[in-house]
Image 1 (cartoon, rainbow, N blue to C red):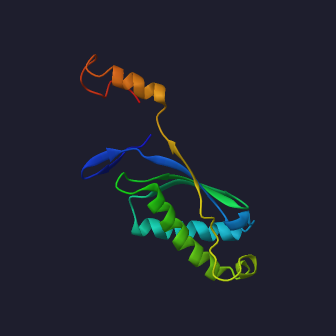
Image 2: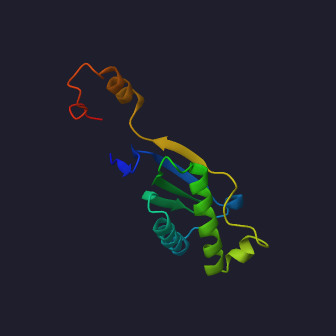
Image 3: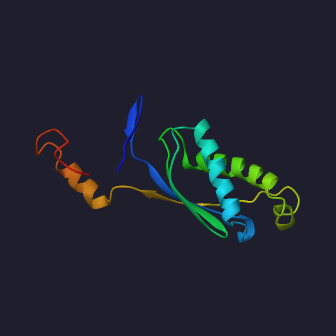
Length: 142
């Protein structure tokens, strides 16, 4: 487990995101997905606090394991990813104009998110042990 540091906090905020395509259209082939990953890297250049740990796809959705700093909301990051990748992917792959009529984006309005982290039992044990062992938290492994 990796902790991230900012000027006022240390955090481990990882999320599993699933971004489905609009109408669950099967638009992700290896070429579209490779370009999607390039666009993700560009987003990270502008927002270096966002860390993409893992990314993969099926034909109609993408999965991301992503670390987001506490000062940013999950919804805010999802909007950034969807807005920047949809526009660029539509411009690069003209076949999508036949799949999505007009100016519709490629992403569904919704998304799935789940937190990833230390399990509840470990955190309960950690809290219960506070003040009982050497005050240093380095002895207790999370």
